[in-house]
Structure formats: structure tokens, C-alpha cells
Amino acid sequence: MKFSTKTLYGLEALIDLGVSYKGKPIYVKDIAKRQNISERYLEHIMLALRKSGILRSIKGWKGGYEFLKNPSEIKVKDIVEILEGKILPVECIERKDICKRSGNCVAAEFWADLKKEIDDFLNRITLKELIEKQKKKIKKTVHYEI
Image (cartoon, rainbow, N blue to C red):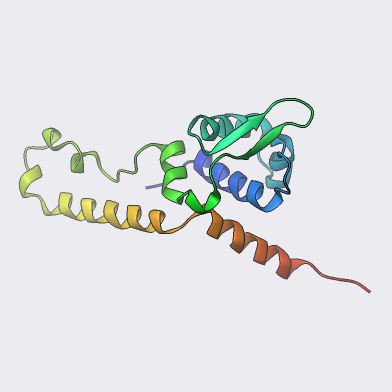
């Protein structure tokens, strides 16, 4: 299973927004520049996150994006599912009708267990935790000169 660049960039953009936010909305172009992401591509990602209720956009010269939902309430799983869709290693664990052996298949059980582990892991981590980790990394890399 591989997550798309949409999810990779979406998570990076949300972390950047959380680190950079100082009470004023953040422009997509600024996030795109800092994260080295195409501004046009990032606009589509941010639109999906806005439509989901995680972000809000403010129009005008003081506009940009800010969180509508508190980052402590946003699980990484929420972000992944907004940008990727449902996390599903194989289709047969959800659609029993596509396989005659679904009720008696150890492989299907394995895939179902894997899905549960992935879901549980992504549900344990909040966006706020990732933002705080990023802030700590930034502090460690700042060098002071006298």
C-alpha cells in the first residue's frame, strides 16, 4: 500500500500551517514555497481539506487558510481518508461478494487485521502532535550567532 503525493503534501501543508500560524491566515503560496510543492496542486489539496471542515479559507488581501477544527481533534486517519479515501489493503475484506472463499480465507483475515492495525495507528496520532514535533525539530536546528 502506498499513499499518494496528495496525502503526503496535504499532511506536510497542515503541519506547516500549524507551525506558521500566528493568528492570521496563511497563504497557500507561502506554504507551497516553504514545502517545495506546486502551488496549483496544493490549492486543490487545501480545497479538499476545506470542504471536509478541517480548514477554512478567508478571501481578500488578508486572506488565506486557517484551521476550522482544532489540530488536537484532527487524527492523521481523518486526513488520509479525506485525501485518499478509505484505507483498504484489499477490496475483499469489505466486499465479501467478490470472493467465493471470503468466509473461510486466512489471507482475508490477515488483510483485515492489517487494516485494523493501520487504522488504530493513524487514529492514535493527532495533527497537533505532529505540529509540536515539527516545532521541536525547528528549535533544534536554529543556530544562534553572537
